[in-house]
Length: 431
Image (tube, rainbow, N blue to C red; front, side, top):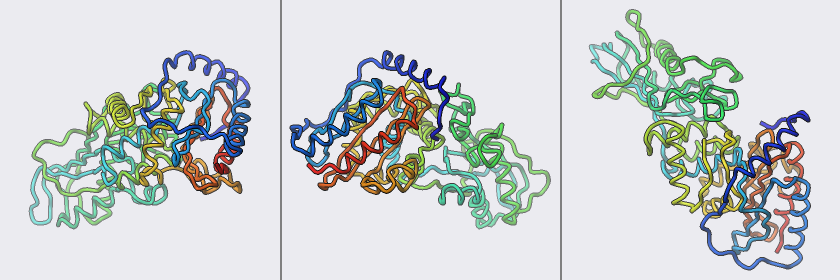
């Protein structure tokens, strides 16, 4: 979310940016192919002038790089190996790791399992609602209004009914043990926060929102999911025999799978993350990575998975502390981002997850009516003193240009029109 800042925060931003540069340490880019000779013709000079004009206006805590992926030439580089606060550009490391490790068709499943038996049409025993970190899980109406695709308690209830269960005599246990108990991130002291845009839980319901605008959260999100499953079963025509209490706990080994609801494919999940820059999805995905491929469903475990994957897949070594970029400990260089963009340029599952200039997501209001509209796709990153934008532009000459503009110690509302002009210049490149 982009906000204007009072003057006191601007001064604070500048002081923090100085500190962040001092703390950044060595940068280092990704292990990318050697660059082709830099062009020196009129088009290259025009691009350099436009980029220099922008960088002069944004202060000394910023860096940029532009590379022609078609020719391999570096067209512009300004402090490209100095680490900066990535803000939500961090999500690119998280989502590319999730895409490559889960696979583009990978899904996260929420399952109902049973310990007991069906007598006639009545299930007698305990139903376990087991979450596996699906950020879309919740109600059908919430799903329709927010995502258009996802998993819901209504799907599970309908599938139980189709299994021949017309009544339940027993209880429901909600299992959110896929994740740890921290419902926030390191940036929020691991506590729930509106900055995370949801409540992190292995079994969540409507992002953990207890109201319509996400400013109040359920105290026990897994328990709420269990209560909502019971209500959905009643609505589906499954009778509750007796009290049917709902509690939280772990699913025992040997419980029989009865019904399952799957998230959208990972290609769609990363689009739901990157296009609107969704912190909740990014932080959920990093815990999923830790739970599936690391040592458990924690942010730290997920960070370790991403760090290892990024080093092996991209030859890059950014500094990680979370999945969304809310943390001020994260550091990334423009050259590292360009290395990622270079390697992912031919993967439509990734490129389609980026916002389109003048049309979608966090770039919907940027570059409208300019030459860059519909020609550039990108990922923004915004904190109160950070404004970043990275991505691809289809240049006038038909080449694909990757760009990374990382601006720290600056008010975002001041930076955006400068970035827009720079991106238009990138799109107009005709070398």
